[in-house]
Image 1 (cartoon, rainbow, N blue to C red):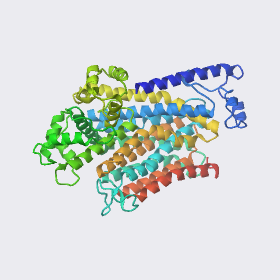
Image 2: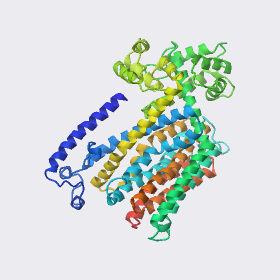
Image 3: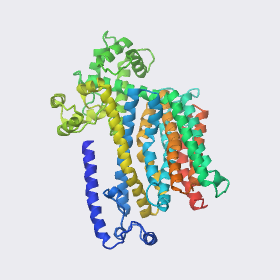
Length: 602
């Protein structure tokens, strides 16, 4: 992570120097005005990729030092860089939120602050899209915010929703999905996903959350040109009221938070057992080909199987859990029950060796997926830097560097083997770090959580504005409306953390994990419809902008109502439902294009 940040900083600095030099040269030949009418007039006659002519015009450096450009490829590069930084911000906020949830538990924090933090990157991008510049400039750029608002909601409820159905599908029996049984392949009616009734309530809540959109659209529905600002104000009051009501509901009915907390504790147990294998001289879990090392797993199994009957009982599993010494306030009996339930696929209250290696293999795969898509460590992992000096640099920053421990752990292994195993395990510290994480002071954990949240907020606040400028510049260079660019690109940045988390949960192929998956998707869409819309309406009302987003609102209403009603009326979703969700995404784009550019709604 440290090396990645250094690379990004070096790119930004070098690019800043280049653009600053270009600005100094072009100033001799250009007016000092940022944007003038001649620019827009002449730009339409320019060839699409005429970078030489484009470079003759000035661009505005955000904060006076961040790079900018007027070329197509330059703006595409900046979207990638600033987008990645916003992705990091979202990931930091997610990691800090999970830590805060573990420390304080469900309740006021889980119900009030965590949903807001999840939607914070989107809200900041929407805010800066119309905050600066003249009202005319803001009116032009605010379409970026609307594109993000619509794109985030539509992507979560179509592409991600459908992907979770495909990845989490199990065999359906009597219209109910059987946990961990997926033998029918891509059977459109014989396989699918089941959720609980609370997930249906979440879908219903999401469908109701579109009410502010309907309120603000009343003047357009009535074909009235007067009262639009009043409708925006009433819509703002409605959205804020519903947002407060939703947060209060989350405080008194913290079902999603309780599930997230349970999964967080499960990650501790999973990490603890995998580390127990490594730190008790059993050997490496993976062989040279990256496959499970059956000899090592046999050693672990035999060490736990005290009576030697070839099966692990609950008593024997309890001795394993106690021996791990996790010290994270887990109920040992409950932990043993859950491990037994996850590993015992035959249902005989015992775990044989085949079930044991299958369970460990599933955990390793889940750890690999988590480490692949989440560059920021969660509460039970640290980022592993690939050589000794970078490890010490990172550990010095976290005050836990121990060169003797590192040398001890890597003795007898070559560096490539160590890198691969630590990467796949998703845990990089061994027993010393596990001890540090297990016995950590709650005050230190609180500080770590607050730092994550502060860092994520600061990064999001700093790079939201230049990202919007880059999207607007790319729109100008390609002559593609900024709405479509922000609709497609920005949700990939701000919602990637939630999306991958949802897909990983769905991959566990259980009703409980599927319920958490879809509840979080519905919850994220609800926060988009309430918090992000509140920010957008406040921006429109305070700056006196024109609300002219009929087609965009229609797309949001169609997707939210269709998927909300669909999710609230049933708890089992066959595989064919995923294709309906997928189809809604391109249809949304086509509908906006036809209504705006064929029928002239905008």
